[in-house]
Image (cartoon, rainbow over all chains, first blue to last red; front, top):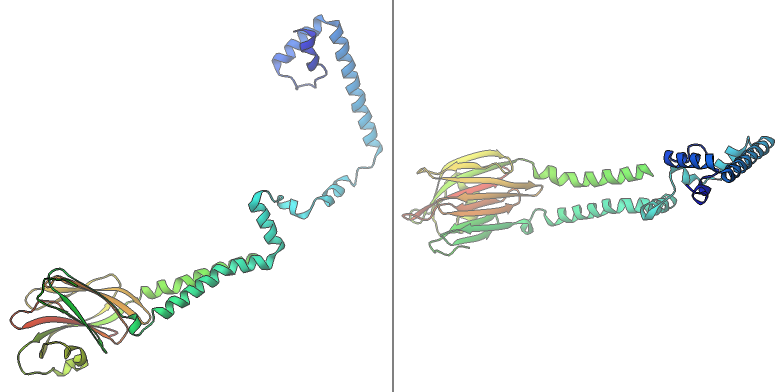
Length: 160
Length: 145
């Protein structure tokens, strides 16, 4: 490995490189004083930044950080923010509950109307009388009387 | 919110159920086997008075009852009604609902099949054999006994 190949690997954190890269970098550093110096600078800088951040964090009072962050998250995000058209529709229905209730009752009202319509049209009376007669060899005649139908079969070979 | 959805679905289920329950109801049926004659002294036996309006509409003038079956008919379960001479007729309750019952009559002797919907109290009179020697066999069906 040359310096140009080793440069991007310098300053990497432990475990960040795969074993092959780590072995190549270690071999290059053992023979290249320039990269050794650069690696040392980067490690020192990283340590300084880390130490500085820890000092700054210790100086601040972060006891209310978690509560402050949670207070700024909208309630809808607790159950998952609406994503996609279905999520947005559900969010809309949560905000407009009367509309949602009306849309839920619409199928029930439609079923009720259909049921009442069928009940009215299929009720007793002459309109409810239905007759189908099939005869293979003989002619069938249907006489409708006040007491009900009379089905007769004749001698003709024509069916009805 | 959830209770409104639940109420809506319950309403749909309840509305869908009554027709299904009514369609499964058994029907008490009275089935009579009659023989009609073209010739003879016109008249009806006393037991057939309730059929006068229908029987007098035919060309047969004398009537005799040869058999009777009373049955609590279940939908789709055929009832076999024997005719004198070894033949038979099959009567099936196809459907029953408040205010109407549908019967199917299958008469192999005349190769005739009928499907008739009648309200309670009305009767079906059907010729089930071709006329032979001036007479023919009939069945009458009355829903509701």
